[in-house]
Length: 84
Image (cartoon, rainbow, N blue to C red):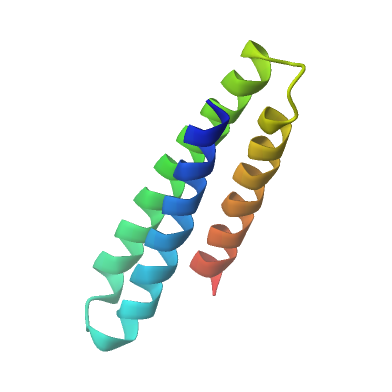
């Protein structure tokens, strides 16, 4: 579960920053902002939910806590990109 959460966080960062990097090359800023917002919300919810499930299923392993911290970090990193 923790590995799945880390994958969701990584994909969220790559997708949001990739679309943000492509935005100046295209004239569709409104559409790209909608795409970034959808990826940000869905990726964050999936990453945080799977990290919480990882914490609940095996409390003795620190991987769940690390994946939860990474999920929240990815949430804030991508959120700052949307606000920029």
